[in-house]
Structure formats: structure tokens, C-alpha cells
Length: 148
Image (cartoon, rainbow, N blue to C red; front, side, top):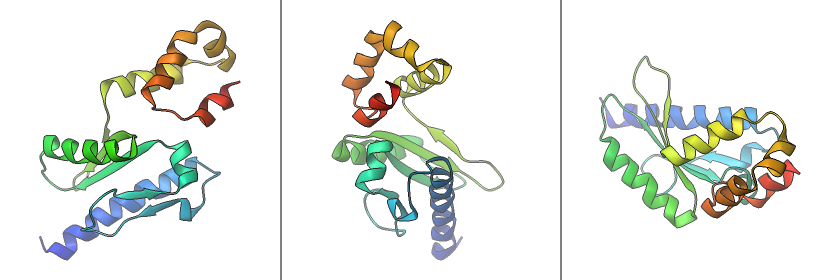
């Protein structure tokens, strides 16, 4: 595959993720989430300070038929440490849907939060888990303020 075609595939995945985020997070504007140029070092999706408050994560995209998951995770973890964010590796290949690779702790926390139907239940019954989540720096203060 030509280098330009490979970069185009990568850019398409970045734009797909950007568009999905903008669709779900309606308070964000297109300038808040930008796809970076191919070949640039750093984040694959640049987040504005406002977007970073809502999404304390760092994305690495791989749109390839095969890749080393371990070196890709090392890459996104290194960048995440720079920004004190949670690393997320998004990957796909031809004729498949995109997948996300996240840490087990992050996945369990997301599943738990998704299972809570009554937000007040988090506050009254789960002070310990809230403290744990705050200490992990996965969610920002704005997230916790919305719960109250």
C-alpha cells in the first residue's frame, strides 16, 4: 500500500472518532476536537481545554491490517502520561468496525457508572468508589459536579 493511502486510512479513522465524539458531546464544537496531521508526533486527536475537561483521555489510532498492540499501547501510554489522561487505543482494519483498547480498571469503572440508574445513589451509597475515581484522575471535577 502506498504511504499516501495508508495515511488516508488513518485520517479517516481519526475523523470517524472525532465525528462520533462531536455527535455525543453536544456541548463541544468542531474546534474542540481536531484530527491531527498524519506523521505528526503526539496525540492523534487534539482536544481543546474545554474538551479535555469533559474527556480526560488520549487517543491513538491504528487503521492497519496488522500492528503491534504492545508498541501501540506503549505509544499511547507515553503520550497519556504527558497530559495525565487515560490512554485509549482505537484500531480497525479493512471491512471491520473500530474497536477500543482501554485498561481493565477504566473499563470496570465505566461499566459500573453505566449500571447506576439513579445518580444520587452514587453519592449516598458509594462514597468510596467516588473517592477512588477522583484519585485515579479519570474523570474531572466537572463530571462529579454534574452528579450532584
